[in-house]
Amino acid sequence: METLTTLKALHVLATVLLLGSALGLAIWTWRLRRRGDTMVYSRVLQRPGLFGWLLLAIGLLSLPFSGWGMVHLVGWPLGQTWLLGSSVLYTLGALAWLWLMVRLNRLRRAKAASGLTFTLVLAVFGLLCFVAIAGLMGAKPV
Image (cartoon, rainbow, N blue to C red; front, side, top):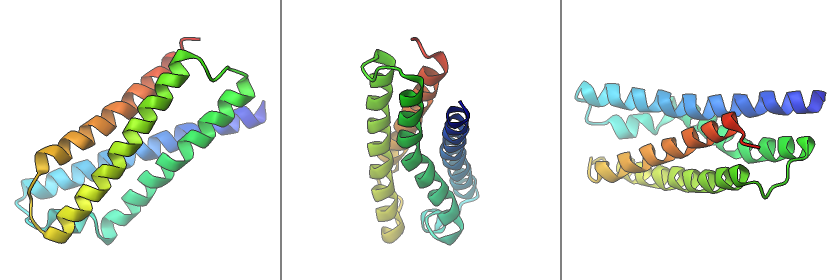
């Protein structure tokens, strides 16, 4: 049972890192844009934001492994609707996150703020996917 408790703690920590880093980067970008900073995208994606991006990536990469380990230890069948739904939402959220990274890198290199609406839609979609997963995990309709 100690292994399950450890995996739960790691899973919660990864979730907090993922959502906390995303929220921190979003607030930081919003505050810089509000001040009228024209170089906001290059600044957020450079060194000061690197720590936040790394935390976000670590959380995103560790969640499937810790989640699978917990499901395996508890003995739940992987065919349960809430687990399958969570897996689909996770895949969609992760793909949105990767697409967002590509778009933000293009914005940084172009040093122009074009196509921000779609970039915001990607960020909100990814966030909603992960919040919905957290809701499914919290409800655990077994």
